[in-house]
Image (cartoon, rainbow, N blue to C red; front, side, top):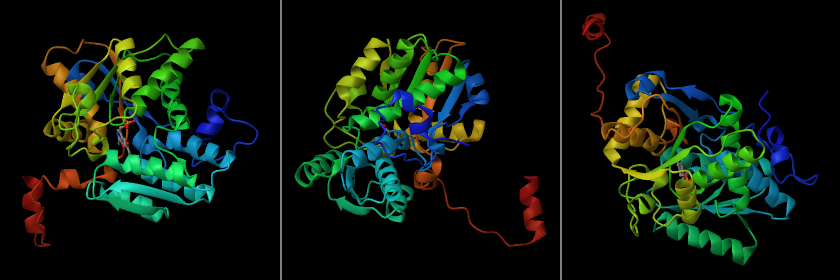
Length: 348
Ligand SMILES: Cc1ncc(COP(=O)(O)O)c(/C=C/C(=O)C(=O)O)c1O
């Protein structure tokens, strides 16, 4: 049975005998070979499908530790700002832990599935008339003024828990991949992967860092395009973040690994989402598909070496945000429930 992060990797995490044994059986997500897409790109391609965590995103890996340590350190409630997945995860683990959760969201820019989760798990949802970056400033003030535990990736326990994904990849492949490709918003996850590979390398369990490729949406790409984005815009609302709090760590992860940041357009992201589902049967939310869009762009430019082993991190489940896809297709009208009508369709 899945043990959860605190049990599976407890010896590598800041667990004490006072740390609550919190778990929603997160982690141990599948590393799925993308056979068809890999053939098209002429690489050995795997998807680390973190959309199969309990709340449907990679956030659970860090949240379980952040909430457990908040309890251990005497916090009586948690707060976060979120583009959606952090709030869903924080609300779930706070519910499990029996403490209140306050989430500050950029009104009108959070996918319905994620909002439904935060409400269902019982969080106090506070939409604001501004973007994620301002929401994070307000959540941090709430934590300071009212002694709540902030569980965004400014909380070090979040990145420590998220290192577990790199350990799972190494445990399964027997080493690090040649490349790790993933979407970048607040830049916590790419930083956590770097820390995780470094740590496993220090234990002799992998041979150093993979080349780390962080992909952003071109309308919200402060790291990829090297400029401010005070009004970030992208259909990939999960990475609609203009002021990444982990920017410096992420830049070092990319430079130390000989990697790169890439910017891709929204249409490239949605095309990657359709390809991923249509070729290899995996439905991931738009932000998660930015990595695949980046690989397709590199292939087009002749900058994707053949035969290398790549892991692309699918950070969130497609069910979180079906609107992005549905809003771009014409409505599917019902037909008469007659065999002749269906037969014509089946034969076409
Ligand atoms: C699906 C998905 N893919 C990628 C990212 C980017 O990870 P970071 O670069 O570590 O921020 C997010 C981030 C979401 C939030 O930041 C939030 O939920 O507040 C995400 O939900």
